[in-house]
Length: 205
Image (cartoon, rainbow, N blue to C red):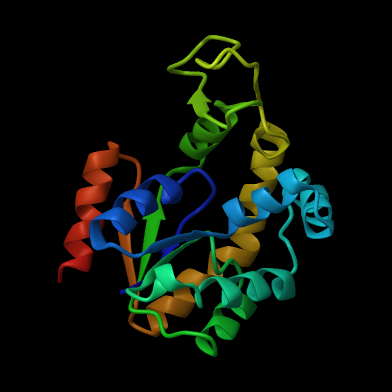
């Protein structure tokens, strides 16, 4: 099973991807996580990506495609994989067709103001990398004791820019995959388990 999860920043793609990948025993491939690993390690790619991501902009297609092509050749992808956050442009989607077929595309829809609330409330641990949300965890420190911080790309001004970029460059992918008969849309403005059930219903058809 080879899947793509589409949806704006904060739609819950990552949360749902973890659940679905585990249930169907396929690899969860998050290009965002891959890039953040590069940034933590301070690689040249990581430094270039950080500047772009901090401004809410997209990393160039050739960089992302190179990472993806290498990733899907790994052993844990033999039963399939789930792309979370890729492709983000029509050009990436067209390039992906030359690399691998896709079985289904799940589009997770959430109202804009709900997205802003979700993302701008995120807090990360500077030490262990754990994530929290200000609406449910008010402490300034992680449970491990280290300080929490807000990622630059989670600040409201950057979030709004990310959503503008999504509307302009990524949303056209919905029509792209509708025309190919691969797209299925679910309501992401619901409890996590409800959204999970809706996605599983699509995949079990």
